[in-house]
Length: 288
Image (tube, rainbow, N blue to C red; front, side, top):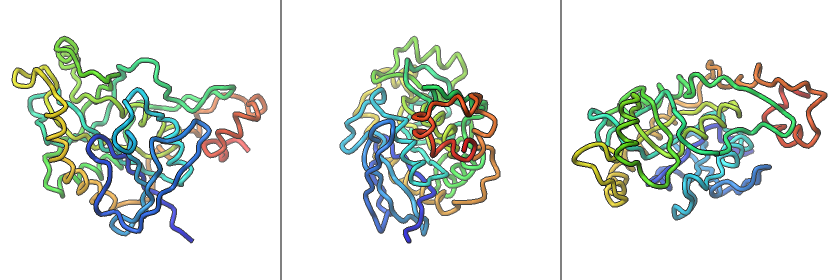
């Protein structure tokens, strides 16, 4: 019987595949929320079975705003994933977070507009705790894995999630710096929220590509600049992910796996049958 891929990997800009993946099998997953960005690649990495998803689709076809975050995370849940390592390109808002550095943020700040970032609604209300949006256990493993790979790793910090697809104005970039944010990206907050609702541990491996536009030497961020650093970061990212996967899975002593235990507020008898069925993979252990 095939092994369940308990570890999920989300490949962001520049990380569309991993050379170490073996015994590959493509799996197309249908979810109640539509299609994920691409078929999942079920494969073996350092002796562990993983599920890899290219966040922006094959050929990088999807804008951050176009991503079906719900389908992506729900698909991982259907596959049996309990841990998600998300690799993402980010801009730095600090002088000491240099291009090619790695950041494992512990906080997020939302500057997106109208993105759907919950599985709930349609007659079922749930409010998960999200004060600490990154799994402490998984974040620590990712940071240790980065150091083992020889990368310059920064533990902690706040990732401000902007709408995009345009990069920041100088005024916006300076505002984010004055607000105390550390890195900026366009995708990870919704993934983190949905992973928490799905009771999946989540951590971001943020790959610094540029200084955003606040820096006098980087006042015009270009795709060419970012892609050049992405390509240089790609090998490091793969090594970090592989090193982290080597330590997983471990016993989940964090709260991530019990996030819905006290979150569902709707009375069971009031939940519409269609909603109950759609969310069964998430709520079955709490609502029979």
